[in-house]
Image (tube, rainbow, N blue to C red):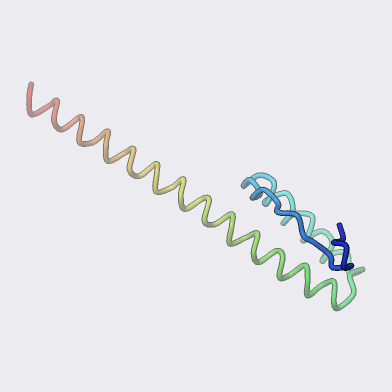
Length: 85
């Protein structure tokens, strides 16, 4: 989209889900493996891929942390019930 002064506006995009980011990384890898990307396109794809991989790693880390917290909560509950019984 363009403003009246001719400037291009970027519309805000919703953050990608893990699944969408992962699928896009696969697309990027296929494009890079094809050998058809120009040098500039390769650079842009590598930058985009790096950002997406960081997003995926962050999402996986958050899920891992939540699972660990859940395990700790279950352990505390089990220990408390064993101590009470």
